[in-house]
Length: 262
Ligand SMILES: O=P(O)(O)OC[C@H]1O[C@](O)(CO)[C@@H](O)[C@@H]1O
Image (cartoon, helix red, strand yellow):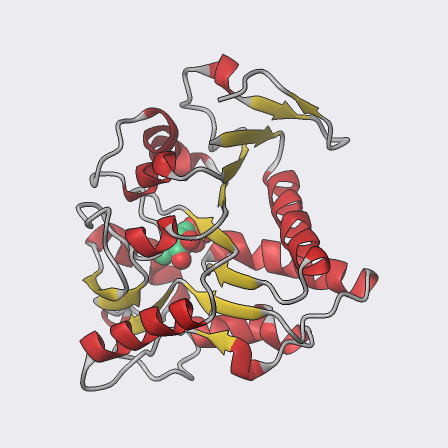
């Protein structure tokens, strides 16, 4: 894992947006894995403005979102399809047919999950997977105790996740109890992963992800088994890390001070 600690959340998110833009510039036919959540709102805002500044073409890019609530219509204002349309897809020249988000309702979630997994396979697999981290260490909606080998499937959301996402809904009752999410095994098959964590509410999860044992108790810790992961943190999210000399510090000018090679 390469761990980059930035002074501010702004810098961490800017760096993530730069990495995504670079990927699309260098490989216009990239298959990207995308995430949602509060952290990514800023990442996408920066990505949209960089896309405009550098006239980056997205027409041949394919995207797969990590997850979607189950049991609400796709056009619900809080669905992840709506989120992606609003924050990214409507603002770049991506072909809507190349944007895959798991289904949000239907009679057979198992079939919807299998179809999504098959679509990822048919695309040739994810080149670059963007991830956020939940306060409980989830990635996608792989909640603690998820199998580290899991594929796309229906998951029950924990109360911690429902509480954290309450802000996107009018009432707690409206917060869905289930979601379709790609699995941890699916994420580990991506060629490369970027994970962004900012704010002190993520500090404990970030510590478990990087310094804890690989364990289903912290799904993000499975990323320790991936060969190419970059973690982008601000100082608040990094505050519980103890093994300080293991990390690269990134200065505001973008220069890295390599303190380790791990
Ligand atoms: O950026 P946030 O809102 O803290 O969310 C962190 C993670 O939690 C989720 O929103 C799911 O709750 C993920 O999609 C996201 O990556």
